[in-house]
Length: 119
Image (cartoon, rainbow, N blue to C red; front, side, top):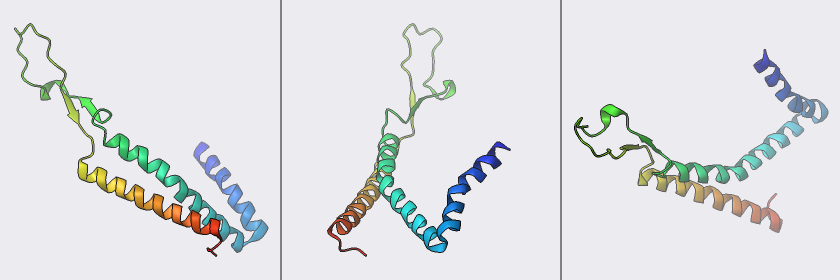
């Protein structure tokens, strides 16, 4: 019931625009939402790629069976063994290239709009 209520409430702004201004208003609202999403995307991609490429952030302590052989009579404390789930260099490079392309495209569009050359 709660999910249904929240979904119905989220439709109210769109319904108001549709009733008030019709299809041109819906088109303008759709374009505006896509522009906002495009401008926010670099701020989402950078931390995602950076954190998932970090060996410190993307490691977990290995479960006991995966650790090096443990000797029962050893007096020394065994060093913790970690499993690395970070992105490889290839995946990180692709992520940073996508970030650069999106950021450059957004910068170009903003400059064109500021100069008044866009329609």
